Length: 87
Image 1 (cartoon, one colour):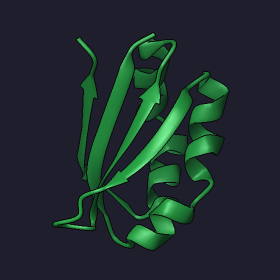
Image 2 (tube, helix red, strand yellow):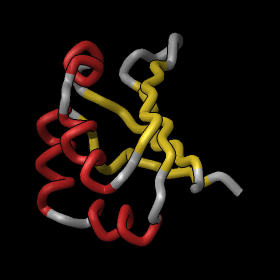
Image 3 (cartoon, helix red, strand yellow):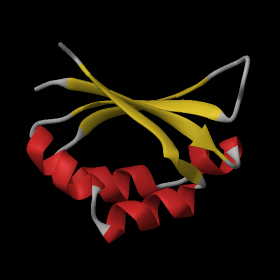
Image 4 (cartoon, one colour):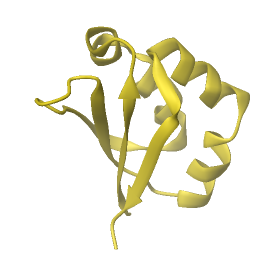
């Protein structure tokens, strides 16, 4: 199961950290071990580390309206999203 890091900018770090949307969106995909990170030099740059059982399923899910809604709810600036996959 690969470990994935997704990092991006957010509008409101406190809102993003408190949001239950990550679990709601990623949970049904079988994603586990979700951990959040904040850049201490730039608090609006954040990251999520997670264990992903099916990368194809994640890629498909990330291109759905549900992903866009989850990101909008959390204040994610979608155009800044970068995913890194454990090699």
